[in-house]
View (cartoon, rainbow, N blue to C red):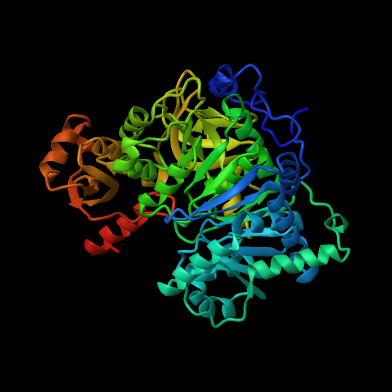
Length: 586
């Protein structure tokens, strides 16, 4: 039986759809992988978690590894018990209702999965808030969502006096990166934090997250039962996942239980033949981001141990985890892969069991991918997804990955490449990628205008320019809004960035378009270099060998660093704003 939300990509009208509707990518599916998504086995996201908890009860589920090498772990049985306790706290202690929004603002730590899974079991709606947000950004997330509870890491509690009074938050819980560590290790970590003055004084009424979990446990011990709560359906709201805000005020993507459970199932079918008996994933990307949040759900559902890194900056913070654990799965973004390759300890002793490396979030540059395969021995399997798609849409099959490609669509996922009128373009030609499937969001929270603009006839318009080859593999060209128009010719920053990144000595690059009197727009490249040997002329000469004239950077600016999102995307909007201000056009 096929899931009712899966796109029927074989029934369309209009000439030119045939190449997409024939789904040429299906020939790359393994024999035992379904072409469309079967009926989901779990009633909701919390049910999926509980089933895995029972099946793998004695396995380690989550481990936090600090830069010092100090670790704390929870088994599946412990995660199940603690998340049930937190669900009971939300419903029976606080009296929150199904559908109430609850927010968390924290880096990766053991409290995170307890919060996520507990909120899901309670029928509450999860609101992930970047801990590095400024006060106005926090205000927006809390007020737009109407969150009634906020769980915040103690290191950022000094922001509470400014944000809580202006929000609808009724209860604040404070957690620590050392929560749920063994007592002695927890004491040592908190003592070091106190000595280094890492935790500011909190002046807002709050309760410890650990105490809240204990109170929920008492509610269950006194006869309360989660089974007495109203049923949680697959199409109920699970999370308001706010977009990165790279194009203005961030919007809350409404993700349902069906969205997340479907995507975890789709990801499993994509990897099931290649999952080793040792399922140890390293999660350096933040769990408040949909990429890492999705990975945590996937690996929990298959009994893996998810090793959490609170902060991947500096990249050396990952060293203890690679030394202590035989990592078999690693999800990263271009900057993280590049950063590891620049570390001598990683190059000299690459992980021996790392068979699956998945790249997402932003395009993995070919130069980085080629170097990774040389050192690690396995390619990066580039994938593609968005906040609005929970997140996965496509991924490279391990049997036949293509360099530079984002791979083929997941089971039950329809993908087309269309022009500005929504009509399909010929195979091999660039156009906007549109997506349909059970992982596509319900819409934007309280933004019917934005929802109507993004979802048309069930298809989500991604805003990404892409193309499909005759083999059914897709390639991202660039963000539609980032395209630079030089004398009427389209220039895609990704292409220029990819060329410059191949120049030895280049550590990072960001490319934007700036106003130009002669050509309308001109290409400007911001370059982070390793040493002074990377000169303006060296960059231009390198570009001349690989790019036609109109794509060449007219301006090259060297920087110590580039503005980036927490998952390593270059913030081109910040570079553009800076350039326009500098040119007096802001």
